[in-house]
Image (cartoon, rainbow, N blue to C red; front, top):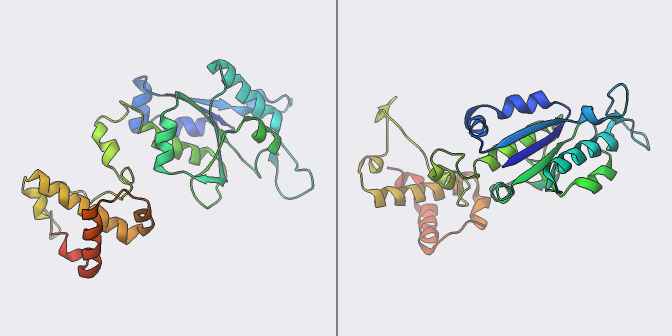
Length: 250
């Protein structure tokens, strides 16, 4: 899968996305991540990419011309228009479903804004998706774009060494992930739940499902409204609300 990032700070995204799992996937040819410097496309002799906003106001606005020409160069390289994502707090909040959807594309362009934003005219011309990673404001779009690319990349076949982990992690099934434990069996006076030491696969899976339900109800109850729950899940949640979590985490 190809990611093209239109940015004023290419080194920032290069350093952030060329390490760990994502970096190894890029080295293995599963991902292609290119940072495109918008400054390379400005016609201003001083490499200026912003200007004062019409109508007054604080701050500067990124100019349409260099953004458009950078985007156009990428689309010409690809050979067609592809989905172009603008990272903005005004967009739809990014969720796991978006990660899976974008992972189905063979190429995606991301635009990183700065200052007070980007000239609206170029956004209307090139952007297909307005996406936010939360209801807060950052200094630029690079961090949100890196977050989205990390999440999307994990859904690309072959990126994870164990593809099962991509399907069972938090939010993949609409619920938060169950607690995880490793050696030793006892640490700081706390033991691993006995069920995980039993070797009984069916009971372990049942316990994990129940723990996911408990954790979601306690930390993100809003997710239960859209999670795919069966009759047993609803019955368990009803008992949990009456008896509490302590009865189920042995």
